[in-house]
Image 1 (cartoon, rainbow, N blue to C red):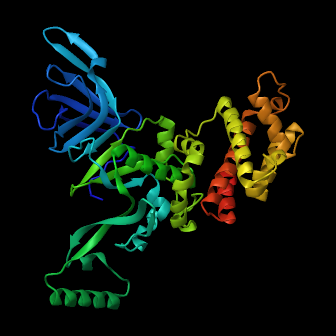
Image 2 (cartoon, helix red, strand yellow):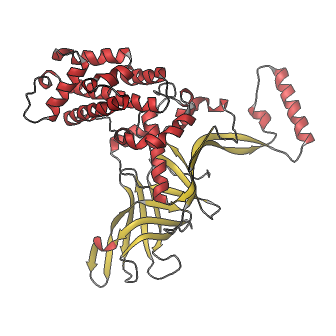
Image 3 (cartoon, rainbow, N blue to C red):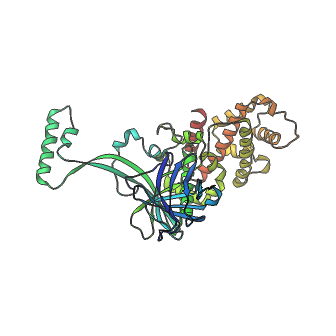
Length: 441
């Protein structure tokens, strides 16, 4: 990846000149690109030239810093504000899907590969407070190749030039050892006067995704989002691709890519939260990521409900949402029971007994204790039916408060997650550890 980067959780503005035909000077107009995680990508424009496009699928641009760019729409400037005075002026704020900085990109242009990070990735792989303990390596730390695609997790580093100054940066309480170091360094510099040392300033991990059949921007970013949605479940936080760079087919340099996110402020706060490697429910070293990557693309569509719930989590629950979670995840338990080959009468309890730790089962029983029904299968069935069916007497519902609903929904979601983790090859002790960290702290 290049040294220049853009984060999906930061806000940016780019001023430039835009046009719909990259080989023509006709109909160009000035505008400003605005990006924020809340509002996504927007183009603030003011068009007076009658030769400028009324509508188009994409715009090309030259930014004020001299960079080429491409905006992927569609665009319809007739929907904005029209001023009919001495001139006909169209103005407004127009949203669009993708921004590519670094080149003009036609609709036929395909991506050779794409590199990206995600929020929380660095801490997930290694405690950043101890990053100096890691050595830079050229080879990928994980490389998974399957039919049609491959994923590489690599690292990149930045350095500053340093020569004899290295002696000033390395010290020892043992003066004799320090003198030996300085003497050895002088000897090396004298023997190799044209060589130099570099001091590492940063070390960062990133994911490189590539397909055998090159894809367009929409398909490529869809795959990238699928990968980050997996990590949103693994580390239990809203997770989105950030610092995205892509290699275009037939083009040597990398381009920067913005994806238009439209996130609630609470989701942004959770996504930017600084987590500790030591307190994450799962970390890189606990998981066989080669196996996880290999299996994920085959089953990800089965777990869209989970990925959306984690990526767009707000951390806030109303009674309505708490009720919805219970209905949603109890229904998921039925599907899991079928997948496990369980009996229909055990549709709720079988997944719980299969995946929940003893502590989690006891915790769920305690939540239903006030209702007088502690047989989990029966309790969940009664509560789900009271929530889902209009006109049914709300006997159990009246005995529970919102905190109970929230916690029941949370436990049921953990069971669904545990089923996913089992399919991804995680061991039972790692699954139970995940449950414990997210329930009991």
